[in-house]
Length: 78
Length: 115
Image (cartoon, rainbow over all chains, first blue to last red; front, side):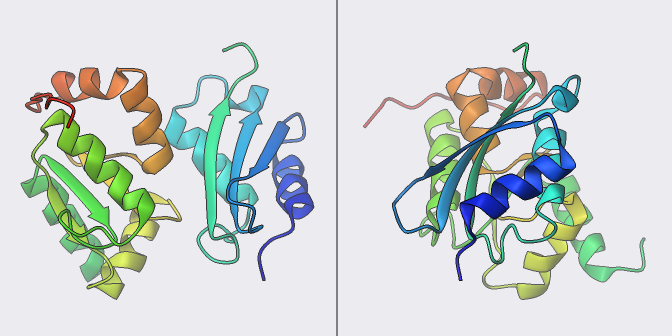
């Protein structure tokens, strides 16, 4: 079962409450998502650290239940 | 040495080779679009790298995810450091940051003519 986009957004916001999450279904199959995540908690973090924070919020679903999630992360100022 | 033989193996690979790409398939025949993208970027930059096919080595596939706390493959390592997966590499390449990063780390870059 592909993941519901509402669940993806909810999990990210539970870990990063201030985050703005924009999801896009890349190929229309409900299984390949692109997410743009903007959060002040990314400030001063490397890209790897920012992506790791998002992956952690998904609690192990990334790479399993969630097949593909292209990520773009940034802090609000940049 | 750690008590995890797969970690020792990964440490050895990334210390013996300046640029290592853990990927699905081989550089000549990538078996996943994300891996193919990173191969293409490195190819365009003319950067020599060692490709490690995680599909052929299931313990390395799981091991490298744990090693870097990163849930997916491909994973690019330069001089022993994890640089990123497909999204980060593409973003860094498009901004010109990746070429700068390779230069800073003393990795030879030979930009290829677009085909």
